Image (tube, rainbow, N blue to C red; front, top):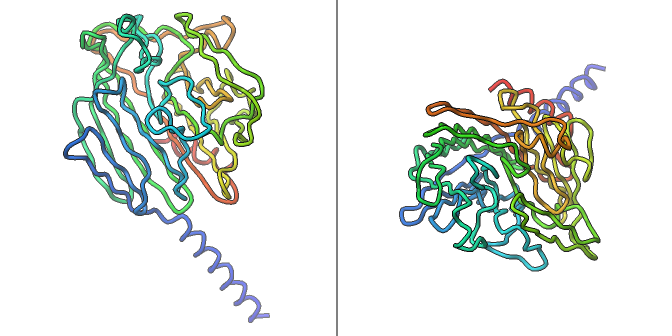
Length: 347
């Protein structure tokens, strides 16, 4: 009996050791380029993402994003197009944060595709300095940026801090963004905002029919459907909404998941209790846009209510999000995400 107990103890300790090893944090390196407006982030010696902020982009982005196994989980277009992936919405690039209607300017839809004659209706986010860039078990990247009009007049000052971490099967980004008003600033309730991510083709929901989407200026974008043997993704929210039913609903978290190669892959976004209009609405489209938008209430409730946000000069607001990318035989579970959300909510 004693032998069996001892054996059981050894097996239990071995299993615990394996779990501990599997969850061991890997080293993060954060490397600012001396010649280009970019910062590379690697975890466990493997590329994770790059913070891009060149003058040629209308906003700073994290692009691309890799799972721990090296799989790229964001769409390649427009910077690095891949065969057979969609080329709609050229402003959907990597992971970004902005909004459709700030003092009447559209920061969300701005891209190289907007003709110069119409640029005055759009806004830019221009990163002017890196505040911190350091590695460790948790990597840190902080930057300062200005939300401006075409004449480079500052409406908001942005300070964002990223914390990057990961283990052999997971990558985590904690993002904290504070926006301070340089002049009175009004976020007018609008569909397109705020934390956005454009998914790799495999994580889209399969769709056979063409879809048409119209922005607030009447511009129509067609997303092509058809026979698609690549897309196999779907959504799940903390409220139990699945697939396309996730769109326009509230939830503490939402995840998209599917098969990419031999692995299952998921990306989850977790909202924070201190965020405006918590829990957020999910602007999660089957064609690959995955966004958390607390300020799109009017369209998400069919006009029953709306949520505008006004900052007087000198006032500020902070948004906090956690992004979790998991790969392996199984994706991150609802129970695990509930635990992560509870932990993130205490930060």
